[in-house]
Amino acid sequence: MHVNSLEELINEYGFTDEEINFALERAKGIIFGFAMEYRARKVLENYNFTNIKSVNLPTHDIEAEKDGEKYYIEVKASKKSPTKEYSAYKIAMIAQLHGIHLTLVMLPSPRLYLTEEILSEPKRVLFEFFRMLFNNENDKLKEFLANDKNRKIVESYNKVIIHYFPEIKDLTSLEIIRPIL
Image (tube, rainbow, N blue to C red; front, side):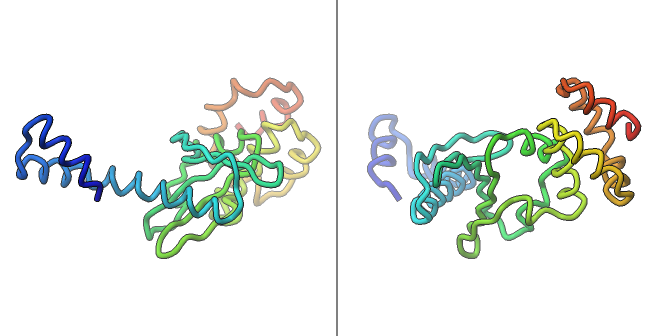
């Protein structure tokens, strides 16, 4: 632990050991999160990523580059399924990113995954749907929705699709998805 920072707080503000211990206990999760983010940055450096920036956005924690590509990296420091908490709304936001979304699982040891590959099947179908929709890939979108399984999965998320409806500017795309709403 960085003793100088604690000593500075004690000396400058006269905090007691009890007050410092209380604050540290309350801030343990925050300290854990920032320490894990720092560790994640080092892991990405070891994987030869460059221009690593902490961003703390709803879709990702870190932005980085590698081989001319832009990457958006979500850092997960729990032992739970890394994408279980990804809501349908978050999936749609991820699909809007112009680059590659990765999930860096830190525990028990660091492992880097292409996010779409570790999503559950319904979330992966939803991700593919939104990516095609936001990129105006109308032929692919028609073909994708012609598949009954894909169509049923997408229809089950109609509230999310309606939420993003105003962001869809391509009239052909709107006509393609209108029947599933």
